[in-house]
Image (tube, rainbow, N blue to C red; front, side, top):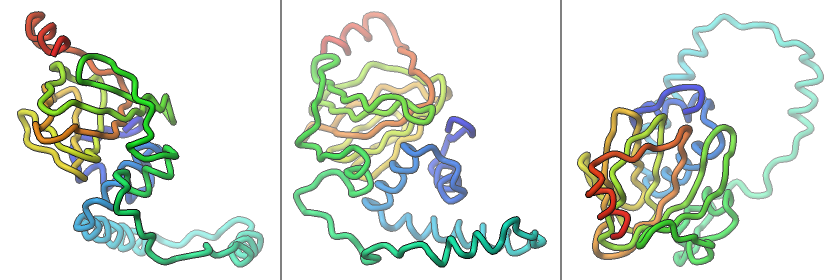
Length: 214
């Protein structure tokens, strides 16, 4: 994303481990790992593989070694290294809550079309970032993407031609994906989206008008 193309969850996690993701995408992955802890095993395996690769590289002398060592030894430890317990009433994972500063109940939503609301967090490190809310049973107009789009489901669920995405799942879309997401009927779908290029509406004019009107 931004510097590297991302088209699968595996490539997203690999770039997370490599530390090359822009901040919004990194927050999205950290929030995903809070909600889907099983994927922490995959991240740990990727980190182990990266460590093996690093161990095979010939060491290089550090510039200003003494100053760097003094800085490390002089740094303060975090006040708590334990696992942070999240409130049961909170919808947003801690990583996302810390990033946006509030939970789902306090989002200042803005209606974009009937049954679809957004809160724009703006452009951050080359990414356009927003939260979205889809009314139960609502279908989002068909669209594709000029770049990469990552969408993390925070509550509820949606489906498209590729599958079903529930709480903690990430949808990875790019210019090869043309989809028409539809929220489940049980409850609103709330998500966090990070994209590095605009989306482009597709489908017939009649379908587009129907989806916009809802």
